[in-house]
Length: 212
Length: 212
Picture 1 (cartoon, helix red, strand yellow):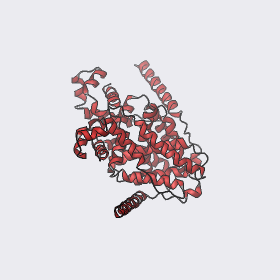
Picture 2 (cartoon, one colour; picture 1 turned 180 degrees about the vertical axis):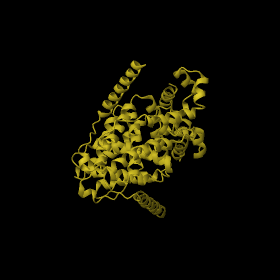
Picture 3 (cartoon, one colour; picture 1 turned 30 degrees about the horizontal axis):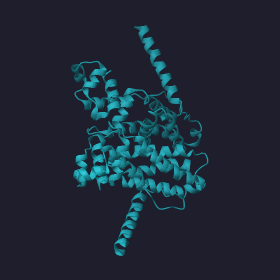
Picture 4 (tube, one colour; picture 1 turned 45 degrees about the horizontal axis):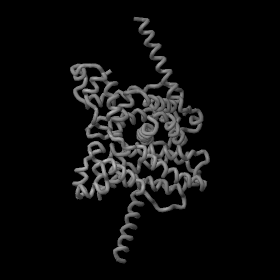
């Protein structure tokens, strides 16, 4: 609750203008409760950035590159409304006056993408010529810019489509042809996967409630 | 002189923390002189953003896509040290508290790229399947993110290389094969072209001086 409140303040105000007072008001908690968990504004920001990567976990797919596509599309979709994702995105992009290490967020995402691409390569889905680290960092850097552009133009309503365009332009250089032909790059996929995941969560929550 | 001073303050402090007083001090001009040209901090910022696109003009090339590559590499190179480019980049990326229209800078770049790609397509250099507007906006958005990542990691020392990786991943989907084989995507090209342009400018300046 505190993290979501903090993330929404960071999203709207940026790091510099965000105040602990506003976070307290939105979260509806006392100063003591907040400081018990987070000693400073900086710690709040770091916690929001950490939460971001943990949040994106999609269903395993027979084609590993499809899982990679799916993660990207779910993230693109959630950046439209999920406070954690939106707050983290602004923190990761802006320098501000703070000494928040902007590298950390980009490094975490690069490691995540690199892991997926390495698995895909081990399965023979990715062309031999691909240097996984380079490709992973290309995806992370380019995505950061695309979500920024999409936010400025349409408050991220067209981000899924922009991501599909990015995939369409790059996958012919990355995936072996037999895999390329099978990938689903559809820009509606993020919304569909998110709905399926939410459904599953509520179903599980329902079962838990029934069991208790 | 005022614009360069303002751009360097925007680069280091961001829009919110930049002050007219600091711009005056760096430019070494009086308040009256500055306000004669720029009525506010916002106007200074807009002028820096406008200056950015005008600044990138490369030599015509037999292959239009090579001109496009060259523009990108010259920009990547200049973002390392040119105050106007650096200041404008930070202004274009950060939301800040201001009402500066971040879209304007991205739109100007998109129009610039779209123009080059349309010419290239008219010459048969670009695949028929390419939707020029989409591809142009992909380049602009992705570049914004790549320069940001490169700044966070290496103060933009590796931006030329990151741009080459981006070109290598996308041009096989954009250029027809006969053109693709002839493109020079080398990451040293920006530095070389910039040196050639600087040499030409000083040579012309020399001639002007001799003539006067």
